[in-house]
Length: 196
Image (tube, rainbow, N blue to C red; front, top):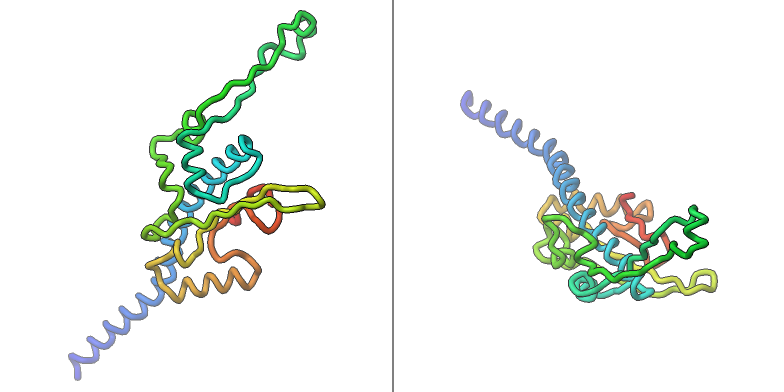
């Protein structure tokens, strides 16, 4: 009896500690995964905005977006001279020149950027980002819209299932997307992310 009681106390203490630590560990892992995913969604937004400036629409195809990064060009307009210099303007020494620059030489130039990775949700074991694009009528005007999303079911895979269900329910209760998302195909939102 005297041996069993301390063993039960130790086991109960461990179970209590584990139950208290579980949400703390979940939050830490959720925040880490979200920060990596947010960076990826920002990269997608950057490429989508450049794609739209070139083609006047967004793409709903990740392969097209990756190909645009690898092989596409964007137009840069350079002004020579200052419009504030009236003498230069009178002598026509002020002009604008446009040049074509490869997308990969201009955008997302950092050492650890791998364009092929933008197609995948981080920590998901290879699940793909959800990417949609369309042209919607807003107040009688055609407006290109896009949306890139990473549902919590994929982003938080491997973490405590009940805590994921609770997080999704909280989001849905207040009408928010249960995951991370940039842009919206429902209404123009200036390509904002739901974390901003």
